[in-house]
Image (cartoon, rainbow over all chains, first blue to last red; front, side):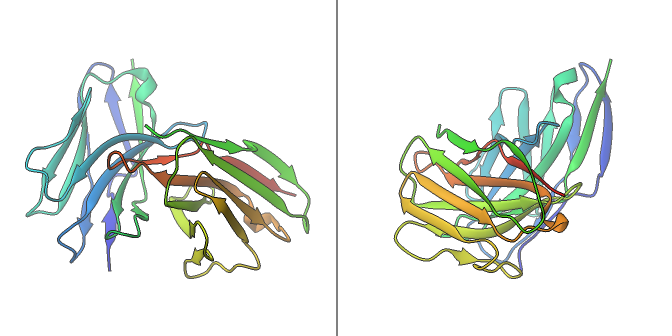
Length: 115
Length: 114
């Protein structure tokens, strides 16, 4: 069965520093997608970044990058130059095999950025 | 990128009543999904809503409790029926943007049942 694991319930980072949020996954399907979402206290789920299992390069979106290590089944999110507004819950998710497109979520990491 | 409008954004309901949550997508999508996020927890998929067919429910969720409609390719509703305090959660809809690989979410409905 597919599974997503986030082992860091909470992380602290100082403003302007970089932080890495860990995510490991388990699947027997050769084709899959990995997502990171940010959930501020308002409750909405904000898409951050996507990595496909066949993508050769690590995904980047502005200050967000995904450190994809396929052999280790890890998909860590790196946030560079942290900002106070980055304080939120962060969820790693894996897309089920096409065509269902449903997501399986990890338990989340609460990131707090301090001045 | 697809934009999903979800309403209501929050509601406080009495035990035994029902609430219908609506999601409108600004483009046609094949599948829409409904998730529940209980307080302090991660997201759990309730069901997949396909246009023109019955929704597919995940283990632990049944149609009588969470009836879903999908009348066209841009709209879906989820009803939380005969509510109890245990139904107090955030409910989110999502859809797959077929132009790219992103799955987008509505802004969520924060439901409190007294």
